[in-house]
Length: 422
Image (cartoon, rainbow, N blue to C red; front, side, top):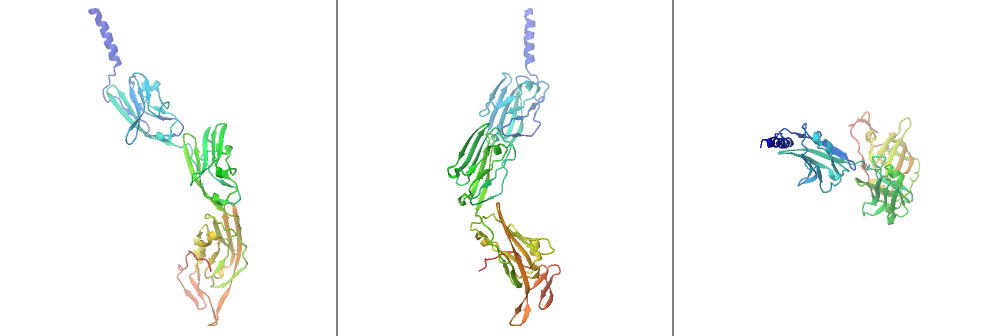
């Protein structure tokens, strides 16, 4: 019997050494970061560490993704059996740093992350009768995005570029670019690119009228060339990019106008002090885009050009300066090409050259109208001259046939839109 004692002692000692003799609280689990930001299509490392000089090989590690109503198993590593069980949808996408597990590195590499991988992850550890867990947030950003663009104006019969530009100048090896109408969702042009291979499809309604450049697309320019613009092309278009791991789209608005010019006005336009005057600016076209740009400028000797109206609004400085009378545009007539300017109660300071300029896409035209202001009108009944009050902005003085009268310098007419002249 004595000869058996040493053997029993040896066996007990081996068993004792294999059992972790660590009391609860001797482990702490932590993540050095609260959030990890990854890029779609790339790999991300979710850090998780166990603070212990020696971690038993039998340690079990489980990673889960927390959803509002459930926890989704991502992967489980059984240290005792040294096996990994990957959750549904994560096959081939997870990897532990097994050579560093004994040093407490329980981090997980998540491969080819998608936008759907965003969320709160739990790193759960079981060592004998001890359990601990830590949390980390994974955010997934797009590797690039499509930049927003302004509305585009096309001219009937000409070609137009519908812009679609990425925030990067290089695309991955494979992608799909698609252009379609917004409503209804009709295909216009589609290109699928995979390295040196590509397939291209044109929609039935736009056969032979659209172009996409593979060279430009690989450099981030997804713009579509639309040839021989028609009035029926006026619509909203959707440009989309699908690279497998990421998708984005933008809407481009196309407005269509006819080829037009501004009719040359009769010069000069002559009005007496106190009268109203309409400075004509009439377009030749009957198809006028809503996004057209109109500008009125006054040019006078020994003075810098003064902007009166620009891009649907009057310039306040000029409006305040011209306090003796209001200025109006016939906004309800714009769709008919009437961009004329009306000045109420003209006075001598209104004299000068007025320039009306109109821009629509690549089209631009302008005309100049000379305004001459003559002396006061004669009142036949009283046989004396008169004029409407004229307020000098700088001194707040009202000039009339009766002499000088002090007025409130804040008085004046504001901008308004007039009904078209009959």
